[in-house]
Length: 97
Image 1 (cartoon, rainbow, N blue to C red):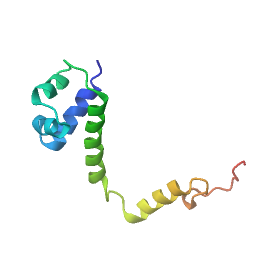
Image 2: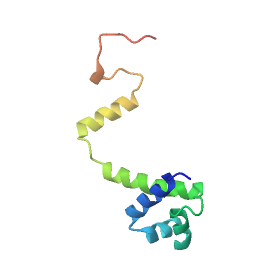
Image 3: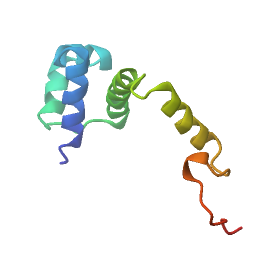
Image 4: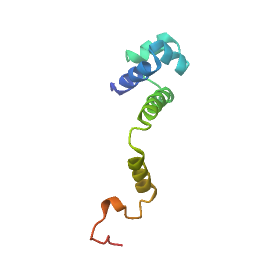
């Protein structure tokens, strides 16, 4: 079995304050949580996804404000206007259509 679900559960438990807190968040018992962490039972997809949400929300909240506003604006500009040429990457070559 892959170590990925176990690592994910461990990361989510660290974020929430421990295995007990993660078990409460996932609405499962601590014995079942231990079985998942010890790979005695396969982790169901819906629990895997809820653990992913914990990690993603944590990363999202901790990455807010990481880039200065000007750089963040440039990233937004590029992603919103993918079909337009960005002033950051001007080139004398005209793209083929």
